[in-house]
Image (cartoon, rainbow, N blue to C red):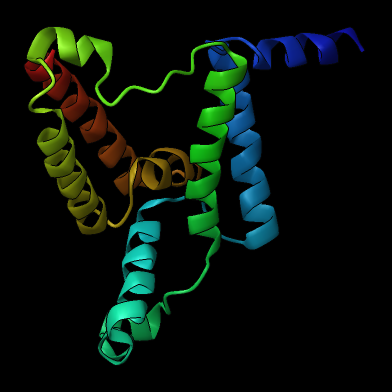
Length: 173
């Protein structure tokens, strides 16, 4: 019973133990495979949202696209996963006392000012979405689910994510 209270206290901290976070991610990956028979992934949610928007403005055209014939744009577990990550991030920052409404993070503003943040974020997001679709998965798809299945391609992708992240961080910060 004492361990249960320690875990609950840990969840209310601003920074979680990497061991607890890793164990929770592992359990989530296992549950996802067990319940839905699908791996954790987020990059397909981008295409799903684009398809849902396309259905609103150009339904016939959107539904005639080959991708959406094979992957109909509808509420999917990947989209729910992404929305849950956003909601969980909010809850975590709020319960940890770290939540604040800011358009530009303090570290970015100190180094670069606030003028480039929006366009840099937009371009970075587009490049990440393109890269994830090109690589057949995102950091969660390859880095968690693929490595869990011992996929060589996912291990190579994960290594490239780290190398690219380190280079990008050195360049930006």
